[in-house]
Image (cartoon, rainbow, N blue to C red; front, side):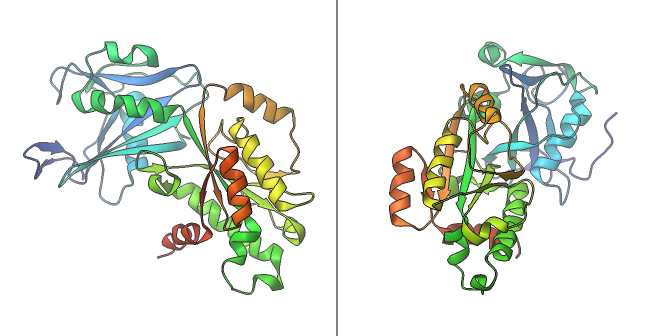
Length: 318
């Protein structure tokens, strides 16, 4: 049974409404690989009773939106960790916010109503969601949330260009500098990337992180969950191949890969491609190389500069 939380309570918002959650609220939109999402039928006595939405509730002090969403889904729907988010959407009011955390599980996870706030919790086909009497705010957000559910973000990092953008002595130890970059990318993978940095809708995305190395930097350590691609020849050529591979489904059926990669296509990637056939894969490449930027843009990727990536990395340490 759900215990009392320090975030429980009503907020009188500047929008003229009252909202539940002293520190805001969050919910989990959980999807499987078979076109279903977890929905909650709210108890008649509850706020917006009788409508369908997603498991969620008030955030506690110091609790992130992801932590709150996963906790509430566990309390209300029996959802168990690990739950790895791939995106989030925020409904912001003057004095309150609601964050929808989107996540995927392989399928087969059992869900059920585990407290009195729910009449029913079940997997429901995505194509039939709008036939239900939905909670008003969820109904308004659903078209965008549905599009976000089928979108996967991949961030491809030109290691040589990014490391070289910061004169910190990297030339003395290219492999060590690249390992440090991989470690910071791993931290960013856990924290998430602002949607506007990737040119995507929503609030935050958790992209698959792909680091392309060349030359002496190929000796850099593997740092999970960053997926390292080691170029056998010209780094720019490998980056273009990596972009095409990502757009074809490689790296994108899970939030992030791990371990090393020899830069060659393999059976696992062809499997990824078939599983990702229905996905909208969004690839962003971090590089300042003008010719490379033109090539990857022509291949269908977005480009951002090393300076923007360093801003995101540095923000995690402030």
